[in-house]
Image 1 (spheres, rainbow, N blue to C red):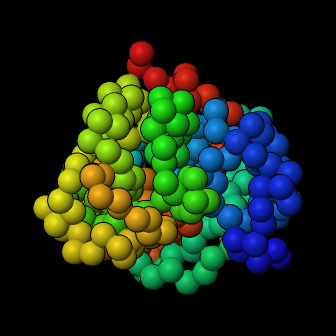
Image 2 (image 1 turned 45 degrees about the vertical axis):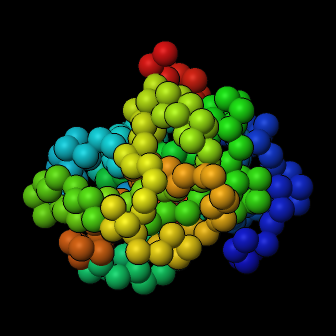
Length: 274
């Protein structure tokens, strides 16, 4: 298997202009095993949570009660790995660059193909991702440092608690992008139009107010510099279910690795309210 984070966009033959289908095929072949920020930029990306059917109803209610971190894009039938509502030939077993396998709240493996683990009782949840509004921010003239530097976005656990459903509970995870105050205002306006991919930020400014003790040490993703005159701007993040898995400790589940998303055929422009 190709080692993680060794492939450049040129080496894989992919770019922001690639189609979602091209990106998924490259991911399925193992030609792209890195984060997907900036890839197939016009298309919506999705966070993944795969759970046994016995937990699916409670997790569905958890998502419905927490639409900021867990905006639902699709739910599969039990045992069906295909997601036709999200695009051509979307196979959840192979089309995410990197998966995490969890047992009793502990990550036990990272894999680029979960076909050997597939079971007839597994249900896939696809949640909206903030990578999907980044294209609109960039088109709006807002530079994103992690994209410019080729990094994964910085993500943090917070003291903001989700609304529980059945056994599911835990802290909200947020993604952070530094920007000037003027750009932060513009970013609020742009992202508020797309609640299907987390919508407007949940916090701006002092990280300590939401329980982040060291902004330079994200829980997931890569740290980026916050320059003088910039604010850290925080959006609810679809990695929240992974923090919930750590808290709830279900017997078995599978998620994406943070930043390694499912790229769908849905267009970001189709998710906007205006």
